[in-house]
Image (cartoon, rainbow, N blue to C red; front, side):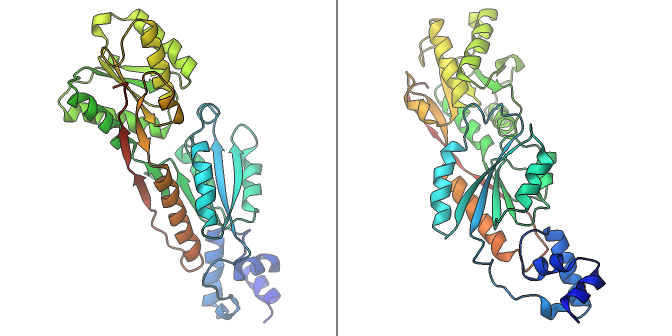
Length: 340
């Protein structure tokens, strides 16, 4: 039988059949596997082209930035610290980086459709602002994806993320070892997965060291330096000075920077009277006076793990429809400076 006749039997167009048997993008992986199964059951497996690896013509890997509201990514985007590392590492495997931005504030369906027909071997989605129902829209793309900077623990989705709980635990451990027993937390008002995990790490550390958690010591603040300054300034004006914790862990270095400035404006000496610890070890940490202690994220490892996982999926994508999701957490390391 001709391929046209086989396509008619399967109820698909000849063009779709051609994409499937030649392992070309443009068809969801679920549909591809369904057709493969039908072809084998009907005795037409011989028309499926044999491949060992992805088509050499498709040497593009997408780095897909997902913006839900831009509250985090439009301010101090962490992905900018990863892009150069990603481009360098992916080129070592003979691939090109293709930068894509998906903005939920625009027509999301059109953007995903454009992505579906792009010439990508696979994609890494920078998922900082994503929620679980957001990533689900990408799981039917005709190429494998790996979520970066979000665990998605309840979904069958490959993901590489920072061990955020480990990071804030290390921060609290350092403060306890320096005789702090009243430790506060400046928590970002924007509820993203990473910040939630960091709060859990702080709470778990307090429990580990038998320190009573005081809800009034968890203070919501804006993500920006200026916004956090205003929120913490209001907090200091409204509380009794004697009740203020002697140390604070912060969701991010941007908040910690604002905290240092506002405490200094109120006459506090850092770290003698108040210790401050940030998170992410951004370049600003060494520009602040005193230099900011911060939880360092292993950026090279974060990128390397996501690339390795994606390349493994690309290599195996034509051979199996089964996939057990892999979740990888990269370690953190506290970098101690003068602020603590």
